[in-house]
Length: 200
Image (tube, rainbow, N blue to C red; front, top):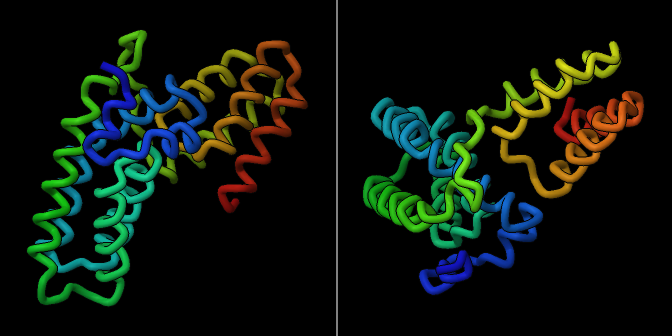
């Protein structure tokens, strides 16, 4: 059984490989996606119960982006619909659409479970959000500026828990390569590119 078997149930694996940069990174992205599932469901249900459409829209956007990254096309589409539809508030058929969303979310998570740890069967990195990723990137920048390879390597490892897009992940991979060769200034330049690209 290969990951391309997921295309039989509507996944777009070629697109997912393009976003993640290869099979191993796709497996890692799937592991993070599976790990985030209970937390994201709890948040979305809570925001729906509280009629908090602002935070609901922001959170379902994260699911949408990550679903796209792993090729879960059906989930991506309904998450996008919910994101756009709830920006101005909840609507008459919201509960039906939300039930459909959760059903597709569970189906996607169940489908990726055989692949979610990757070929090496290592546990996924600890999942982190965008805000924490930005904090770690700034700490990484500081540690590289101080030529601290131990701290820099630690922060780079923590960043495995954030689903960067393919382009930014490649830049971080280059930073790790430069750090391995003790090229601190070059690694720092890569990290600062990521920080700038993420909006700070």
